[in-house]
Length: 446
Ligand SMILES: [Zn+2]
Image 1 (tube, protein in one colour):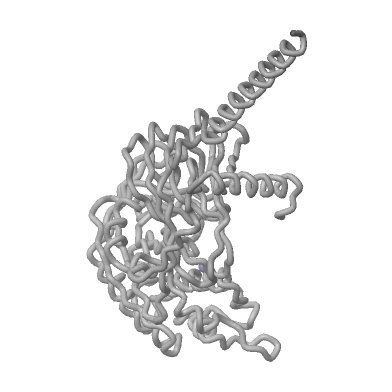
Image 2 (tube, protein in one colour):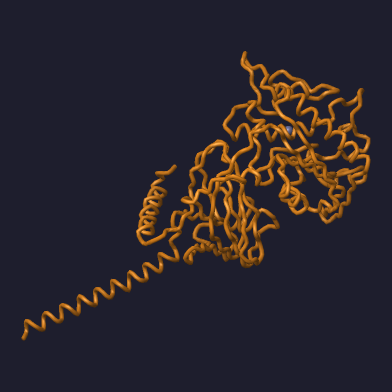
């Protein structure tokens, strides 16, 4: 009798333990399903501010306060190849902290300015893409982000259907340029409305200068590249400017995205010039410009982007050919384009002199031709430095930006963003994450 009772009570306690364990496992699994981000690493500017949750294959970032939050995955890439990353994204009340078109729900490469379009407001599911060139890199952290390199955002963003493919880079040296002339500038600076116009004679001068630029690219590079420029006159006013403490006001790619995006999307351009007026005789100093006539080294989704500023003084000869005053009016265009090649050469791992260092190498700014001799030797790697020839490597003329046309025949890297297919995959994922996290905590990855 007593023996039998003991057996029963033992079984009940065993059953209760089992039940507790099952309940615990159930909640642990639920918690895991919501909070596990598979191979993704979560990252925030303001730590522990945003919420990262997952519902099956949909990943969500919620930021009640302004933050820059993303989850990213380290992806192995081949050098010098174009890549395209896509995902579906949905947003609810996404709002950038400062009015800034590069901030919102987006795909981006962690630690760089490379990104897709940024979605804000409340928008249904839509597909977005990031196109980039790996250049000198063998791995990149591909992130799905609410915020941006340029600022913070709040709201809710859902991401799903991640894909990545490797395209085929163009090998030719024929560069296509898009030259946008903004016919009117209409901005409010320090509560003052400033309206400026580009005249027909400005447009004639710029058009002639662009034709000279095409010829000079070929001639000065000794045939290492060709330049083919399309000119667009934009009627929609330039209504937004960016400010930088060093340069003053200038036009960032974000300022004119709406006016140029359709043209860029439907063509295969390798470089973009934005030609603008930021002052005239009446508005000499209303828009602060710190002594620049061109600005370069910028990019529009990976495509080189430069500003060309028309002079305030209508009598200026800067973009006019004149045999006694200026025989090299295309200089500013060439200079700004070379800034993009200079940056590109560096990003592909080549060493080259700084474009501004002409005096260091014994070159002068000549009255009629400016720094033409310097640019010629710069483009042909013909600058003498202690018996060595330095300058741009000839390869740089074929290293053009990644663009949609590179993906006609592409390789889909299906393994990269593959969701776990079964419980074994999931457990493998958890173990991998644990190892990653431990490495992060101990600094093993740096
Ligand atoms: Zn410069």
